[in-house]
Length: 211
Image (cartoon, rainbow, N blue to C red; front, top):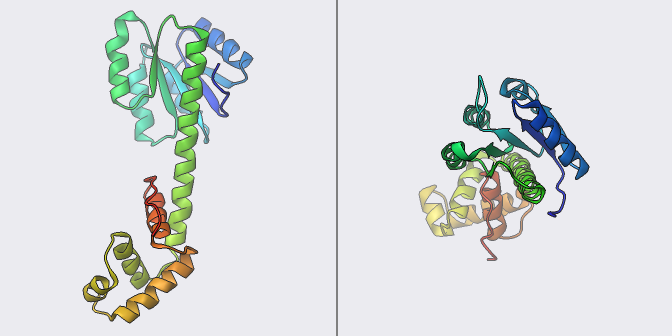
């Protein structure tokens, strides 16, 4: 069995028996589970933090694909798993192309379910952590003055000191002073650290290595 990952599992299915069965199974495996018999009820109850959605693809009023589109418009951190029958595999493929992390073809076994839910929660937790890191990095960059921000942008773009000085109509010595202030304000010690901070602030993970 996959390692248990923290987070909330939301089950949306218009079949009450399916909701109850999945809740009991996932609860028994240690997951925090909440069930809904229609998509609209779920949309009014989404909490923050790592979570995954296990939704049926075919439902009245609002189906799984429509629900997915609503969630994507709200930029949620949820990971989406769709459940489908034999006749709905094409819809499941469309959901995957639109960003769903997985689909489960009914009937599915416990091992497949637990693995899919664990992977979905892990992906959601990663997105939450990345977003929070980006917010922290952006707040650090906001401490820079306009000129320091200009120097920072050119440094992380790989421009040498002389080129930066020329583009900003300043002396190389002045640029070196600005660079030192940028390093001090951002509490970094290398150009690689500056690049990492820039990537984090823009939500792009990366490791540019060392200077």
